[in-house]
Length: 319
Image (cartoon, rainbow, N blue to C red):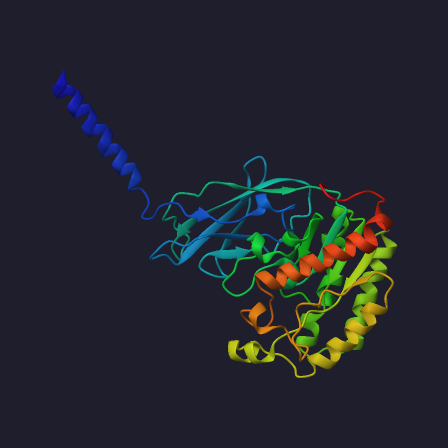
């Protein structure tokens, strides 16, 4: 009997080890923090801990019935990829990741599934570029430390998309904003416009279009000032910019602050030269942790003091 038990144990051990050896690598560990955010982002960044000696990862997005609705490779970096398809329909979705080779042959088991929960309507939402979307060099936008919304006690839906100009924000307004029926939309855009050489008049015209789209849909628009850049760091990092950005940005911000509903988010971001403070940015363009904190705190203060009673007449904390 003891002999038979030893043989049976050896067989079980053999098959278990064979199963474990099915894949070359262990499952990746997801690092997204959507569950800690007030709302899942409209354009989520999927991130994970990269494994040694790996290069390619495959992300699958599934609906609530377990059907695969899209697949993405890690084109952005070794440990992340941002979805270029918006989550603008109410429902529960899930994502998972595995190691693959360049031909998408699976080299690890799937990670645990992580939820993307989409709800509507919302009270506050923010339309913008990477400043709103989150992230910067080496930091995935999936982390709450990269979201200025983290530092604002009001729950704000993130409708940012990295790389956006104001024209792109206009183009996706109906698709990405209207499904969430926000009572108030924070608009933070224009940095990418002036960085590539657009004039203040062009940016202002696009902001006027966005403002009018809000009013036409009974959404209160709140325009936020354009964040500064740091020329020395951007030059060192190889990020192109036009020298005219300072003058054009100053004109745009002056116009923004003339609007009845506007927020100046610059108080603790700028140095004596009107540039983004060096200690706040890794690349000269994106505010990092403390920069995001200053933006979130400035927006919270303005909403609390000037806007919340106008919009709802109720106390906002705890929403």
